[in-house]
Amino acid sequence: MRTEDIISKILFLCASFSAVIVFMITVFLLQEGVRMLNPSFLFGKTWSPHRELFGIFPTLVGTLCVVAGAVVIATAIGIPSAIFLSEFSPFWVRNIIKSSVELIVGIPSVVIGFFGLTVLVPFIRDNVGGRGESILAGWIVLAFMILPNLITIAEDSLRAVPRSYREASLALGATRWQTVRNVVLPSASSGIRAALVLGVGRAMGETMAVLMVVGNPETPWIPLGILDRVRMLTSTIAIEFSYAEWGSSHQYALFAIGVVLFFMVTALNFIATFVIRRKNIQ
Amino acid sequence: MSNTYMINGDAAAFSPRLALDKVVFKGFNLWYGDNHVLKDIDIAIKSNVVTAFMGPSGCGKSTLLRSIDRMNDIIPSCKTEGDVYIDGRNIYEPDEDVYELRKTVGMVFQKPNPFPMSIYDNIAYGPRLHKMASGEGLDKIVEESLRGAVLWDEVKDRLQENAFGLSGGQQQRVCIARALSINPDIILMDEPCSALDPIATIKIEALMRELKDKYTVVLVTHNLQQAARVSEMTAFMYIGEIIEFGATSDVFENPQNELTENYITGRFG
Image (cartoon, rainbow over all chains, first blue to last red; front, top):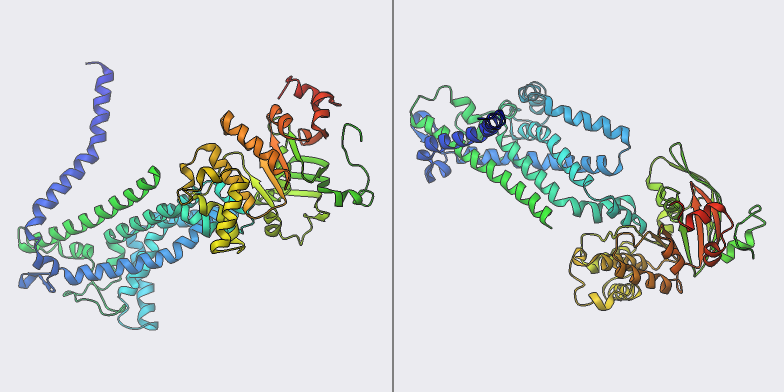
């Protein structure tokens, strides 16, 4: 065999590594998880492992509440930020803001969670009410965590709008804001939507930071207000896996939660890719 | 008048011209950062003729064109000195409203750049922005603009289709119609045929000759034949300066400056 062929084989092995791992994780998850996947698991209102009750409905609702709120907050801050950076910011201001936003990505999530627990949670307890650990705290922490990706992707799609569109609009006597609203934003909308979908996926899968601030009641209930404590799908696995007995239905229930998360996040990523691709075909 | 058409003297001495000429540059300089792009430009552009700016790439002809509707303002490092008058009004006065100014000047760019929307919405964009009309009034503006750009018959049955579905030449005429929609006095065209095939080019050139009856047309081109075919007046530019400006036939047949002659005879460019 020629050296050339050996090298190409080695490179192929390296490249296949992640594909193989993803495949193995999928098979493993499904194998362990599907046996608990049934309507009483998805819609059961009580999660109480020692009574052999494994209903994830309150956890599912809690997760969706926290994720939805976080995405709304992140959108309300992130999209205007992206518009400012791409359309209005002087070069040096953009550099400073961009680098600080990108720095957020580098903060380990447990550190953000720790900050949330020691600063945000007491602040909510003292000024808003409840125990502090709440949906509200989850919103703020998660919003902060998905903000960098959201801003970066949204800004990239705004900057990808051809300069010639902006010039055409300005030459017709439009102001910069009119140009952004009528031409740039509509042209970038698919990229921005993809950024939001990816943000939802990221928020759904986030574990550590949010676990530290949402309270995780032992028997979760369907939340009625934003000061209620909730449990996330991810934190349920993280908290209970260490004491779930090997081979017990408790352990399989946790695997099943993994399956649910896996499918939701994968579906969201597919949707995001689809949204981007459809734009490119146009 | 002599072959060349240069303006001399101070503002007072040449104020009679201001009323006569549509656009007058007086001692106009422009820099991008430290790069001195336009140097002491003095030129007067007459109403209802096609005036061409020609010259080798990088000579500043597009920048000069964009100074007429202050599109250079978009570039942060741009600074200017001197005056440009439109109908006797100095558009570089600090209190000039550039958005109002750009409403009176239509611009057509090098590459066709319709918005990613329907043909109708492309043309209606400006009138909607300035709340010029709605409903049937808007339909009428769209039709008149498309007729003005000699495109109406080709697209009247598919106004709601995306403008990207049109050919390059048709797209450029959408852009011309879009420029006409805000009812400007002046049409600026920045190498409008450089991205088009010869047949589309012939159509756009015929259109330019038609447009000058109603508008003052200023054309940037690096194509000598195009300048000769469509313009009455031609300015030859070289490294930021106007070397020669006069009736197109004079500039081409009897150039006064060696640089102009070299350019026209194809010795450089």
